[in-house]
Image 1: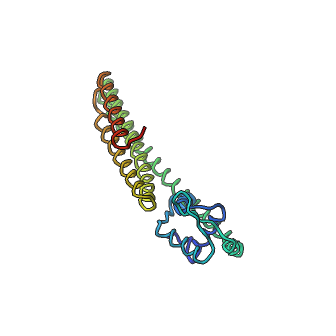
Image 2: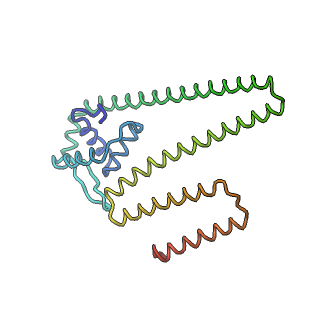
Image 3: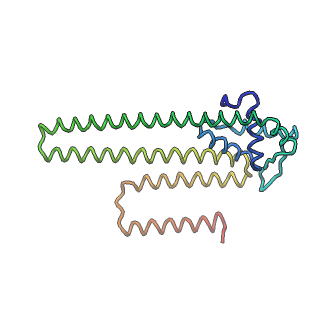
Length: 239
Protein backbone atom coordinates (compact mmCIF):
# COMPACT_ATOMS: atom_id res chain seq x y z
CA UNK A 1 0.00 0.00 0.00
CA UNK A 2 1.14 3.54 -0.69
CA UNK A 3 2.72 5.14 2.40
CA UNK A 4 0.31 8.07 1.91
CA UNK A 5 -2.37 5.80 3.38
CA UNK A 6 -0.55 4.71 6.50
CA UNK A 7 -2.06 4.91 10.00
CA UNK A 8 -5.75 4.75 9.07
CA UNK A 9 -5.62 7.42 6.39
CA UNK A 10 -7.09 5.14 3.73
CA UNK A 11 -10.15 4.87 6.00
CA UNK A 12 -10.37 8.68 6.04
CA UNK A 13 -10.05 8.96 2.28
CA UNK A 14 -12.75 6.33 1.74
CA UNK A 15 -15.10 8.47 3.82
CA UNK A 16 -14.16 11.44 1.69
CA UNK A 17 -14.89 9.59 -1.58
CA UNK A 18 -18.27 8.41 -0.29
CA UNK A 19 -19.08 11.92 0.93
CA UNK A 20 -18.64 13.12 -2.67
CA UNK A 21 -21.15 10.57 -3.97
CA UNK A 22 -22.50 7.07 -3.23
CA UNK A 23 -20.24 4.53 -4.93
CA UNK A 24 -19.76 0.79 -5.30
CA UNK A 25 -16.44 -0.84 -4.46
CA UNK A 26 -15.03 -1.07 -7.97
CA UNK A 27 -15.77 2.62 -8.55
CA UNK A 28 -13.76 3.45 -5.41
CA UNK A 29 -10.84 1.37 -6.73
CA UNK A 30 -10.98 3.11 -10.12
CA UNK A 31 -11.06 6.58 -8.53
CA UNK A 32 -7.99 5.80 -6.43
CA UNK A 33 -6.18 4.59 -9.55
CA UNK A 34 -7.12 7.75 -11.45
CA UNK A 35 -6.06 10.12 -8.68
CA UNK A 36 -2.67 8.42 -8.38
CA UNK A 37 -2.22 8.15 -12.17
CA UNK A 38 -2.17 4.37 -11.88
CA UNK A 39 0.75 4.28 -9.42
CA UNK A 40 -1.41 3.23 -6.49
CA UNK A 41 -3.78 0.44 -7.52
CA UNK A 42 -5.57 -1.07 -4.50
CA UNK A 43 -6.90 -4.61 -4.80
CA UNK A 44 -10.49 -5.60 -4.00
CA UNK A 45 -9.02 -7.41 -0.98
CA UNK A 46 -7.85 -4.04 0.32
CA UNK A 47 -11.00 -1.98 -0.31
CA UNK A 48 -13.96 -4.28 0.38
CA UNK A 49 -12.96 -5.36 3.93
CA UNK A 50 -12.48 -1.69 4.87
CA UNK A 51 -15.88 -0.76 3.49
CA UNK A 52 -17.41 -3.60 5.49
CA UNK A 53 -15.61 -2.38 8.63
CA UNK A 54 -16.83 1.18 8.10
CA UNK A 55 -20.36 -0.17 7.74
CA UNK A 56 -20.06 -2.22 10.93
CA UNK A 57 -19.02 0.99 12.74
CA UNK A 58 -22.09 2.79 11.41
CA UNK A 59 -20.05 5.24 9.31
CA UNK A 60 -21.41 4.01 5.98
CA UNK A 61 -24.44 2.06 4.80
CA UNK A 62 -25.21 0.24 1.58
CA UNK A 63 -28.10 -0.65 -0.69
CA UNK A 64 -28.11 -3.18 -3.51
CA UNK A 65 -28.65 -1.57 -6.92
CA UNK A 66 -28.63 -3.80 -10.02
CA UNK A 67 -26.92 -6.54 -8.06
CA UNK A 68 -24.13 -4.30 -6.69
CA UNK A 69 -23.59 -2.91 -3.20
CA UNK A 70 -23.61 0.88 -3.40
CA UNK A 71 -22.13 2.50 -0.27
CA UNK A 72 -23.21 5.88 1.13
CA UNK A 73 -21.95 8.00 4.01
CA UNK A 74 -24.13 8.08 7.13
CA UNK A 75 -24.61 11.06 9.45
CA UNK A 76 -22.11 9.47 11.82
CA UNK A 77 -19.63 9.17 8.98
CA UNK A 78 -20.07 12.85 8.09
CA UNK A 79 -19.45 13.81 11.69
CA UNK A 80 -16.14 11.93 11.73
CA UNK A 81 -15.17 13.50 8.41
CA UNK A 82 -15.91 16.97 9.74
CA UNK A 83 -13.82 16.31 12.86
CA UNK A 84 -10.87 15.32 10.69
CA UNK A 85 -11.07 18.05 8.04
CA UNK A 86 -7.59 19.40 8.86
CA UNK A 87 -6.10 15.92 8.54
CA UNK A 88 -8.00 15.44 5.28
CA UNK A 89 -6.61 18.70 3.87
CA UNK A 90 -3.06 17.54 4.65
CA UNK A 91 -3.79 14.19 3.02
CA UNK A 92 -5.13 15.86 -0.13
CA UNK A 93 -1.93 17.92 -0.40
CA UNK A 94 0.20 14.79 -0.04
CA UNK A 95 -1.84 12.97 -2.70
CA UNK A 96 -1.44 15.91 -5.09
CA UNK A 97 2.30 16.04 -4.40
CA UNK A 98 2.65 12.29 -4.99
CA UNK A 99 0.81 12.53 -8.31
CA UNK A 100 2.92 15.51 -9.40
CA UNK A 101 6.12 13.69 -8.48
CA UNK A 102 5.05 10.68 -10.53
CA UNK A 103 4.20 12.95 -13.48
CA UNK A 104 7.69 14.48 -13.27
CA UNK A 105 9.26 11.02 -13.27
CA UNK A 106 7.24 10.01 -16.32
CA UNK A 107 8.22 13.23 -18.07
CA UNK A 108 11.89 12.56 -17.33
CA UNK A 109 11.58 9.02 -18.67
CA UNK A 110 9.97 10.31 -21.86
CA UNK A 111 12.67 12.95 -22.31
CA UNK A 112 15.40 10.35 -21.79
CA UNK A 113 13.75 8.04 -24.33
CA UNK A 114 13.48 10.86 -26.88
CA UNK A 115 17.11 11.85 -26.23
CA UNK A 116 18.29 8.28 -26.74
CA UNK A 117 16.24 7.94 -29.92
CA UNK A 118 17.65 11.20 -31.25
CA UNK A 119 21.19 9.99 -30.56
CA UNK A 120 20.49 6.70 -32.33
CA UNK A 121 19.07 8.51 -35.37
CA UNK A 122 22.05 10.89 -35.42
CA UNK A 123 24.44 7.95 -35.32
CA UNK A 124 22.49 6.18 -38.06
CA UNK A 125 22.63 9.31 -40.22
CA UNK A 126 26.38 9.59 -39.66
CA UNK A 127 26.85 5.95 -40.60
CA UNK A 128 24.81 6.48 -43.75
CA UNK A 129 26.89 9.54 -44.67
CA UNK A 130 30.07 7.54 -44.19
CA UNK A 131 28.71 4.78 -46.37
CA UNK A 132 27.74 7.27 -49.08
CA UNK A 133 31.38 8.18 -49.64
CA UNK A 134 31.97 4.72 -51.15
CA UNK A 135 28.47 3.88 -52.40
CA UNK A 136 26.74 5.00 -55.56
CA UNK A 137 23.82 7.42 -55.52
CA UNK A 138 21.41 4.53 -56.18
CA UNK A 139 22.83 2.47 -53.32
CA UNK A 140 22.47 5.49 -51.04
CA UNK A 141 18.83 5.86 -52.03
CA UNK A 142 18.15 2.16 -51.37
CA UNK A 143 19.85 2.30 -47.99
CA UNK A 144 17.86 5.40 -47.04
CA UNK A 145 14.60 3.76 -48.08
CA UNK A 146 15.40 0.66 -46.04
CA UNK A 147 16.19 2.78 -43.00
CA UNK A 148 12.92 4.68 -43.38
CA UNK A 149 10.94 1.47 -43.79
CA UNK A 150 12.57 -0.06 -40.72
CA UNK A 151 11.91 3.09 -38.71
CA UNK A 152 8.25 3.12 -39.74
CA UNK A 153 7.94 -0.58 -38.98
CA UNK A 154 9.38 -0.06 -35.49
CA UNK A 155 7.02 2.86 -34.83
CA UNK A 156 4.01 0.81 -35.93
CA UNK A 157 5.15 -2.11 -33.81
CA UNK A 158 5.48 -0.05 -30.63
CA UNK A 159 2.23 1.78 -31.31
CA UNK A 160 0.41 -1.55 -31.63
CA UNK A 161 2.23 -2.97 -28.59
CA UNK A 162 1.31 0.04 -26.44
CA UNK A 163 -2.34 -0.24 -27.45
CA UNK A 164 -2.27 -3.97 -26.74
CA UNK A 165 -0.85 -3.34 -23.24
CA UNK A 166 -3.54 -0.74 -22.52
CA UNK A 167 -6.29 -3.05 -23.79
CA UNK A 168 -4.93 -6.01 -21.83
CA UNK A 169 -4.77 -3.94 -18.62
CA UNK A 170 -8.36 -2.78 -19.09
CA UNK A 171 -9.65 -6.25 -19.95
CA UNK A 172 -7.84 -7.76 -16.95
CA UNK A 173 -9.55 -5.34 -14.54
CA UNK A 174 -12.95 -5.78 -16.16
CA UNK A 175 -12.65 -9.56 -16.08
CA UNK A 176 -11.48 -9.62 -12.47
CA UNK A 177 -14.39 -7.42 -11.42
CA UNK A 178 -17.04 -9.38 -13.32
CA UNK A 179 -15.68 -12.69 -12.09
CA UNK A 180 -15.72 -11.48 -8.47
CA UNK A 181 -19.16 -9.85 -8.50
CA UNK A 182 -21.11 -11.27 -11.44
CA UNK A 183 -23.55 -14.15 -11.73
CA UNK A 184 -22.79 -17.41 -13.54
CA UNK A 185 -24.33 -15.92 -16.68
CA UNK A 186 -22.10 -12.85 -16.37
CA UNK A 187 -19.01 -15.06 -16.07
CA UNK A 188 -20.04 -17.10 -19.11
CA UNK A 189 -20.59 -13.95 -21.14
CA UNK A 190 -17.13 -12.83 -20.05
CA UNK A 191 -15.68 -16.08 -21.37
CA UNK A 192 -17.44 -15.51 -24.69
CA UNK A 193 -15.88 -12.03 -24.90
CA UNK A 194 -12.45 -13.54 -24.24
CA UNK A 195 -12.97 -16.13 -27.00
CA UNK A 196 -14.09 -13.40 -29.41
CA UNK A 197 -10.97 -11.33 -28.71
CA UNK A 198 -8.77 -14.37 -29.34
CA UNK A 199 -10.69 -15.15 -32.55
CA UNK A 200 -10.28 -11.58 -33.84
CA UNK A 201 -6.55 -11.57 -33.04
CA UNK A 202 -6.04 -14.91 -34.80
CA UNK A 203 -7.94 -13.82 -37.91
CA UNK A 204 -6.09 -10.51 -38.01
CA UNK A 205 -2.73 -12.31 -37.81
CA UNK A 206 -3.74 -14.77 -40.55
CA UNK A 207 -4.93 -11.97 -42.85
CA UNK A 208 -1.96 -9.66 -42.28
CA UNK A 209 0.22 -10.88 -45.18
CA UNK A 210 -2.49 -12.44 -47.36
CA UNK A 211 -3.33 -11.18 -50.84
CA UNK A 212 -7.11 -10.85 -50.95
CA UNK A 213 -9.03 -10.12 -54.15
CA UNK A 214 -12.67 -9.03 -54.34
CA UNK A 215 -13.97 -12.62 -54.45
CA UNK A 216 -11.98 -13.49 -51.32
CA UNK A 217 -13.39 -10.46 -49.50
CA UNK A 218 -16.93 -11.41 -50.48
CA UNK A 219 -16.38 -14.96 -49.21
CA UNK A 220 -15.01 -13.65 -45.90
CA UNK A 221 -18.05 -11.40 -45.43
CA UNK A 222 -20.43 -14.28 -46.20
CA UNK A 223 -18.70 -16.59 -43.69
CA UNK A 224 -18.78 -13.97 -40.95
CA UNK A 225 -22.47 -13.20 -41.56
CA UNK A 226 -23.30 -16.91 -41.55
CA UNK A 227 -21.37 -17.41 -38.29
CA UNK A 228 -23.10 -14.43 -36.69
CA UNK A 229 -26.55 -15.70 -37.77
CA UNK A 230 -25.93 -19.22 -36.44
CA UNK A 231 -24.62 -17.94 -33.10
CA UNK A 232 -27.59 -15.60 -32.74
CA UNK A 233 -30.25 -18.17 -33.70
CA UNK A 234 -28.76 -21.42 -32.38
CA UNK A 235 -26.77 -20.34 -29.31
CA UNK A 236 -27.85 -16.90 -28.11
CA UNK A 237 -31.45 -17.35 -29.36
CA UNK A 238 -32.12 -13.70 -29.97
CA UNK A 239 -34.76 -12.32 -32.36
